[in-house]
Amino acid sequence: MENRPQIKYNSAIFQEPVNGKYGEKAGGAAGVALAHALNLPGGRVVAPRNGTHVEPGYAHYFFDKPDAPNNDVLLETLSNDRWLDHFNGVFNGEVNEGHYYVAGDVLRKLGKLHAYMGHSWDRVVGMMDPGRSVTSTREQAELGIIQSAKALIVSTQAEKDGIAIQYAADTGLTPEEIANKTHVIPLGADHEKFNLERASQLRGPAREKYLGSEFGDENNVVFYTLGRMSGQKGHLEAVQSVADVLQQCPDLPISLSVIGGPLEGSYYNEVEDFYKGLDPQIQRRILFHGALPADHAHAFGDVLLGPSTWETWFLSMTEAMACAKPVVVSDIPQMPILNQVAKEGGIYVPRTDINQWSNVIHQLAVNPGMREELGRMNMNTALGYTWEKTGAQLEQVLQSIQ
Image (cartoon, rainbow, N blue to C red; front, side, top):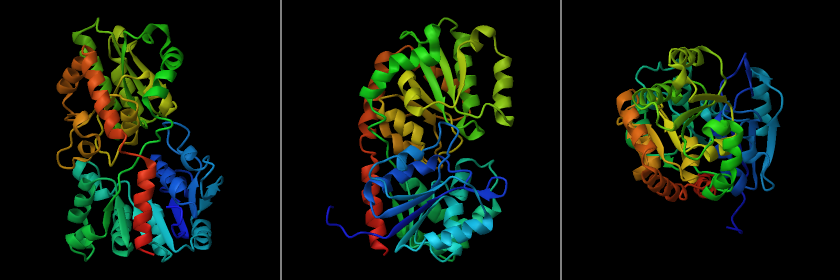
């Protein structure tokens, strides 16, 4: 690929305004920009430096790479008018791509949207979480994006199928027309940061730092959640399930690490209220860490729990898999995205079936051979997810729409 033609390429990654200003919020989806940094040296990435509450953003994926493209680091927030002016001047590429619906809608309004990588689509998420209300502003933006973009990019076949079914009637396009311009490009993992060897090296110090002598002992099996503190990520169901196991087997050497923040707000209060009602002997085995570096979490943890209401990839799961961890995640039959990502190495449980979650947790706790085998399967699957592959496939799509 050394002699490949250079694309004059721009990518925008930002989410809805906070307090009326854009640039406050980037979200975990910004991690996909690593693909651009590695594979599109002629490109430019525009994104806020801050990110999720899991760790201090994903900025390291694309701002701190020596071979990164020219980046527009938004160290200040911008009002709506200044934001549009800013991007009208910046986005003059042969190919402009938007991530997340706000970025895509801004480029569409400027008449400069060519490709769009959605990460989550309101109606597709609604298929997974019927109780979630559809946002009219977002829905209208997505309809316009589907009509305007030359290429739509998703991470799984399930999401591609869902978009074609859910949006055709209101875009004037047939499901086949939407499907024909939708490209499935799996996301990746940073295998330099997330791998079994590095996780093993970090494990001892991380267990001592975050778990102490009481729960850092190797006899203790650490289950963990990893994601922002929201109902979508299912921290409450994980706490309920582990608590149920400990009520039945009080001497079982397990603990739960709840990783993600902020440790405030209505959802955290709901989790905390349930926690406060538990027996003190169970409480002591449930640890709330707040935000931690993801590589440390995957190092000291043994089994990732993901009772999510919905996901369109679950980057934390892919990173756990790369570190040879078993993953237990929600079974969402109407949109089997997680099944398509984790494949045969994942364990899939109906999100609200606490009894079944408890049974799986107990089974994994008492069976180290099962944990090792599932971890090995997951690591082999994760080796197929690299940002280099993501970038190469993305570049093919962008080349095709110049």
